[in-house]
Length: 127
Image 1 (tube, helix red, strand yellow):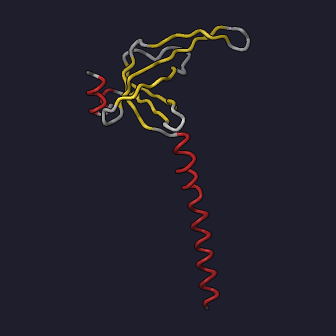
Image 2 (cartoon, one colour; image 1 turned 135 degrees about the horizontal axis):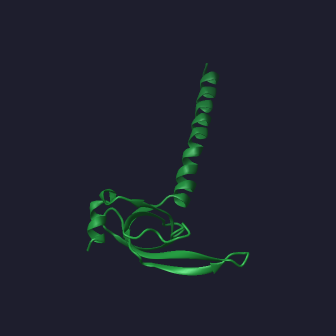
Image 3 (cartoon, helix red, strand yellow; image 1 turned 90 degrees about the horizontal axis):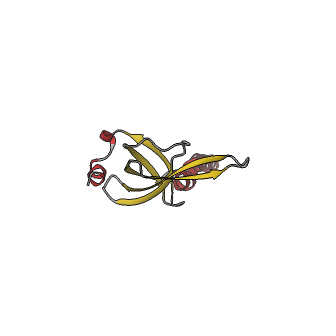
């Protein structure tokens, strides 16, 4: 009987370890590399247009932003990002910008309604 009980404990232990592997992978690899903290900003016409050349020698434009942004508690961070659209971001829009601290870069941005901007962030933006 004790031999069977010991096997059951080891099998249970191994199953638990196997089930925890994806969780550890998510927490220790995905989260630090592909997620971040949300900041909010208001975009006007404050971009810098840079004309680059592609591999074929054709011109294309990049639009870069250097924006004061605020987390949900109103803490400020200066964030740099580009439009990724091939054109400027439409002026007079609120953005939620996700910043990855490990890579020290913006990993995404999206337009949000003013009503979806946290109160403390909005207070700082409107100062």
